[in-house]
Structures are given as C-alpha cells and as structure tokens.
Image (cartoon, rainbow, N blue to C red; front, side, top):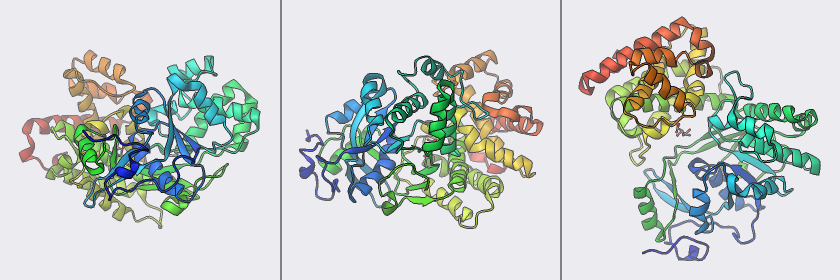
Length: 488
Ligand code: CS2
C-alpha cells in the first residue's frame, strides 16, 4: 500500500509533481470560502496557490455548509490535495492553499470567529444557484425554510446569506469594514444578486446594519470557468500512481481555466492579477456569454443526451446529430443574442467551447450537469429566450432544451430514479399527478412561475416547448441511426 499524502511525505512524491513553493507551516489564512467543493478546489484555490508564491497570508479556510466528508477526508493529509489537469498534456500538482476546513453544522463558532477575524479580508462562496435564496423576481425568498429559520435565530445561521450577515454585523460592531464578499457561482450578475440577498436580509434585522453594509462592503461580480468532473475511484487510482502516494480526495479539471473579476474591492486581496486572473470594470458581458454559450449548451447536451442514453459530454458531442444540434443552437439562437461587445470574439469563443467538449480525456457525466435544472435553466436558457423573443429571433432549439428537461423529469419519476433538485418533491408530485403522461406533465412544468416567471403566459414559448416534447419523444422512439438535428 502506498503512503498517505501529507506534509511529512511531500518530499517523497514522484519527481515531476509540483508542490507548494511557500512555507506551509507559517503561512496563515486571509480568505474564508463557503462551499469548498470540487470547482473551488480546481479553480479559485488553484489561482490562490499561485498567488501565494508572491507572499502574504492568503491561505483559505474552507467552510462546508453541511457535510463533514471533505474535512474528514483531508484531515488525514494536512488539507493537501492533488489537482490533475486531464488534457492532451496531463499534469498533476499538490495544492496547499486550503489551510483549514470546517463544517457549519459542527463548527459554527469557530467559523464565525474566523470570518470576523481582522486577518480575514475576503469571504468568497460557491454555494450554487440555490444557495442565494432568491425568488424569481430577484428578491430574498423570505419563505425559504433556511431564511425563515435564520431570521428567527440569526446567531445560529444555517444559510450562507444568514452566515454572511451575522459575520458582517459582528464586523460592524468591531469596526472591521475591510472585507470583500465575492460570489464565484455561475449566476448572472452574481455579485449584485448576492448583495441584494444580503442587504435585504440585513434590512429585516436592522436598518443600521443594512446601511453599513451598503456603504462599506464591496460585492464584485465574477465570471468563473473550468470544466471540473466529479472524482471517481478510477481517477483516484490514477492520482495515486502519479503521486506515489494516496490522496483521499483528489480533483481533476480540463487545462482551460478563466476567472474574470470586477475590480471593486473593499479590502486588500492576493495578487491574483499576477497569476492569470483578469480584473475589469465590467464583468457582465463575460458572465452572460459564458452562461449562455457554455452552460446553456451543457444543459442542452445533458437533457437531450440522457434521453438518447448517452453518459458523458464526450459521448453526446461525438454523436453527429447532437453535434449538429449544438452547433445550430449556438449559431442561430445563442450567438445572435450576444452582440455588442467589440473586445470579445463570440464566434471564436463558441467554437472553442465545442473543442473543449471534444476532450476525450474527460469523463464529465451528463447526470451531474442535469442536477438542479429548476435553478440552472433560468440563467442558462430562459434569459436567452427572453432576448430572442423581444428581438423577434428564433427560440426553436432553446425550447428543445426546455422540452428535453421536461422529458427528463418524466423519465426519472417514471423509473423512480432520484431527481437532484431543490424542487424535486414538487416535480415528482406533478409527474405522478399527470400519471407520467409527458405532454400533460410538460404543460404543468412550464407553468411553474418560480422557474419560468412571465413566460408561463407567453403563448409562443408554451406552444413551442409542447411541440418539441412531442418531437423529442417521437425521435427517441425512432432510435438514433435515422436522426438528424433538423427534426428537433
Ligand atoms: C456545468 C458546469 O455542472 C454543470 O452544470 O455546466 O459546472 C460547467 O462545467 C462549468 O460552469 C464550466 O465552467
């Protein structure tokens, strides 16, 4: 059996493995990150690792909101882990940027203390779309069970919003305004949405706190990008062989990575600009382009691909009719919705994304991308539909994506397979009430205002989706060999 990755065995790893080049025993934390999942460890922790080489106490205290599994897995290896680039030129390095790990349900006091500590200058988060607790009109969802609980008991928060506000309240009392709160989630205008949730929540507790936050704390918007498939046992064995040591939870990603950050801070920060992070005064175009081009086509591939029994993004994009479908979706409906920024070559960006999906070294499961559809579809697909409706452009293939999600929900419920989605109970109940009649279910699903907002009243959208549900189910029955994307 190989040795365990740890501070003690760092010097014994195979010679081609890059290891932290700063002093792990003396470098402290300056960032608290909520949600240190695979994406964070492959992306922001990677950039921070590089920035640490320039000095400063900028390691990260990672806070898992619920599960203690990461803390337990990395405790045995001094929070070190391997990051592997899975591409034509593979590379593995050990990341030391995570200095501490905690779990909210177990270590609340310690976490609040760290967030209020004057050494902490950045609070960042990847808590996924649902973690923002916003309703479909962009306001704090005061009926959200976690928000109800936090407002009743603000000193023992369970939501990210409640935790941030409790921290900011204590920082206000201590006079520590020098902190920046950075959303790193795939949500359009993520910083603005986070500020909205935080200030609305704070305002319910105290006007003075809301005012202090509004006047003092920056919430920059960001665009984050790198494809990061989940870790499986095959990948863990690959890393063990690369390192010559066992890692309980290694991470993989493609070579491409991008982080664009709005240059608006209320605190010092690591010198991320030296290590490939782009700082700009306006991130919105980058965010919008990435969400629509990459995430929009990812979700389309996931729901259509699963319907045709494909397992991974690579399998789906290698199927000719799906490749055609995504190319046409991009050129006819998504790219035309993104004009007006001369600094950004949208056609080139769209083409590069197709190449990224064709990376044969990555097994990115469509079932992983299909999670949380009710939260993802609005940002990835519906905003493009809205723009196309107002500009009189086609919404045909975008509606195919929505229709494929409806068929996916029906199929999962029919097979009693779990649906990973915060609205899973409601979606399942609808599918059962419709006795799994797919067209009937689709008409109910696209009537959910919390997801589709005003589109529930848009005749053109409603009838196109219902028509696509029929087309898709007929195509699935015909089998793949006779398909071309024109049918969809
Ligand atoms: C994916 C994203 O799981 C998903 O929904 O679409 O995580 C995607 O891989 C990243 O946004 C790429 O930057």
